[in-house]
Length: 350
Image (cartoon, rainbow, N blue to C red; front, top):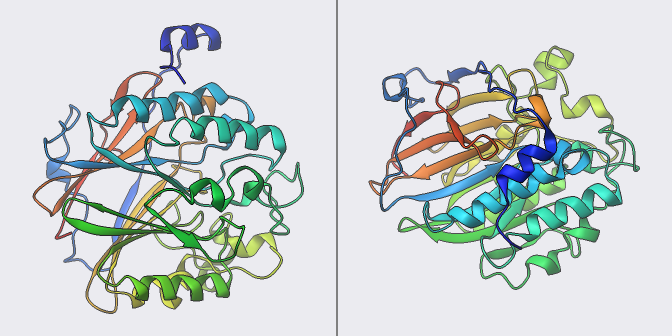
């Protein structure tokens, strides 16, 4: 498919809305561990460093599939157009591909992500809006989904980076393997409110590839106050905890995932989730059982005008092997957001 004509797109949607700032709380479990470096924040966009490689995060795309499909296409076409410029290795979508789990929205998501097929591989998490009867608008009372009709494992099977799935014919729990920056990487994608059996499967995958740095993608893990979801301690004080949905088969929230799976593995490097609105942003660094530091990132822009204004989160891994430049770019307005919540540096051995 051809390059998106941005000028025509803007004319079609009408007036351009300005970019407003967001407030993010940054926390750490350990005072001495690495956090986004305030001294590294600049008024101007951080320049791309030659020799780097990039991961692109597509935060909750539900409003694009529902109301603004052009913005979804704008995001994925930007990835295609800038694949070589920024050495984009993978695209990670953090759940809620759709708003209502219906055929029209899944078809729109499929078409937009189809721009990446054969160009840049991508990994998908499943959100609460991707579950339950059509029109449920996120109630996730059961795990029925049209996700596998439009993104069956067979769609990914020919990719050399596709590892496999937990259940045949189901993409809700999957893993991907790739090499970048001289390091082997594992992306583990887990279903909405992962069941115990999904975490047990994830344990097996993490043990199977102990030398791969692991990034875990799931929809609801870190909250907007930069603490993990914790139903036992905080209950409904944290909005939208997976336990509050009554999803059939049971769920695990962020703290349960941390204790049952994440903190047990020395190769886990990062978790990424969406789901939470408020600021839609959060960051936490925690020390795991083996001394490894786990960067936990919430990024979600759905509450902004146009359901997110096409904003992308970019993770640029520098060639020094210890620095990640975290950036936020808007293809719609062709601007970076450079406030401390949206542009910062993670500095630690990769």
